Length: 533
Image (cartoon, rainbow, N blue to C red; front, top):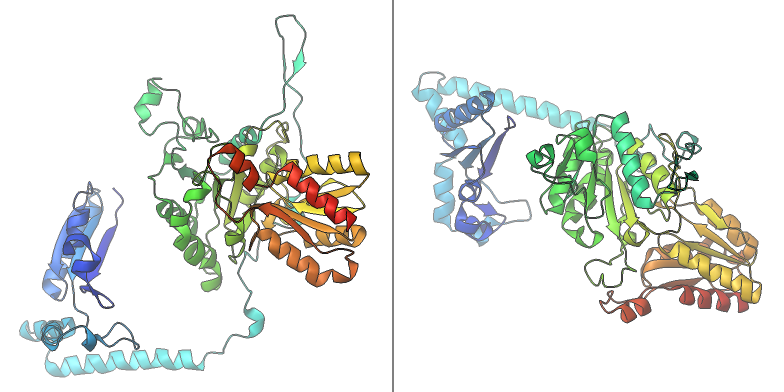
């Protein structure tokens, strides 16, 4: 029941496409007439008296707390869509003349004269006054200084908070292991937690710290029908992977709630909330279904600060379950495609490989002042690899700081996400069987990325291999390989190698899935060939 009046100015055309082709049934009012609590008006928007009365009714309805208003105003289009458009090519003269007869400015002038409010001379003076004001504005714009090339990159990201800085680097404070007396009376320490558990714990602590945080997405709530929870009829869902389990019960339905299956709606709504001072942490259930939100992710969210010259911003976090290695995930539950998003200026992209990094990077994502795409590999949610005790409510890892998983002197391997443990297996086997020492780098964040650590390692080992789960061609690793070849060529003793997925979709059959995605054996083979070059 928000007090909002939506006004649809319907001129019956979208460039050259008429309304009956553009809108089902030719009338937008009919499409939305089933929305609850709305006050609907459909009026001749060129009639000033009728329009005023309709708007007053809608505003009064909102102010009475009854709900939003929807005013569908049928207006005219007095000229072509743009300078490059010629409406005479698709609108006959009779239609254009009919619109001209309904010109709202002329109708308003006639109304003022008819009612004795103004005479023709007064209207002419008023028109001259408006023209003069417009000319002053035009002159002011023309006299303004042009921006200089040095300002091009201003405000792509926040000028106030730099998530790569030392203020986002804190040490973990692990709690004393909780002890529980088992049946035999001996005490045993609590086990380390999975990535899924630490993400949940981090969200919980951040929501306690910052009341602006709202969490929503598909199935993230414990139960949309709150009375089921209150009556303890259900346990609660909390996400298809249970990463938001218990948050609605802890913080209420105003801060944790479900969204429809509409990714553009989720990201668009979160963007609007962020510009108004909230801190949305939203979930896209599967990376495979993020594509309906691309308009918001490419043309709206990341450019708000830059295009407004820092007048507006939309700091938020979009959590996304990503990746394969699921045995049966197939086409629509196995996709990677992170390089598409690292190509977007203004959007931070994070991809942790273990529980501790996920906790620290998620907290940095929430506390920084930029939009962040937080990629969570589904296979790693509950893996034994990379488990950790909870590092405390203030543990953060700065963006753009890679982790050296294993030091080495012979080959540099750069990777991230679920390929990290597979690369570790391959590196350990290579050293065990051939004595080759691999320096394994986990990037952790993809935009920004830690070029300094990569460069220092390649200068030392003189060989580089980039491994990633996405398709080999045009992937994120191709950019890393290109930069190494471009900037570190004198230090290379061998061509830069890449190991990645085949250029094909992930198959349903497990044998095919294993063949398509990079496995430890593929990484071992690539490392061995590079060492022998």
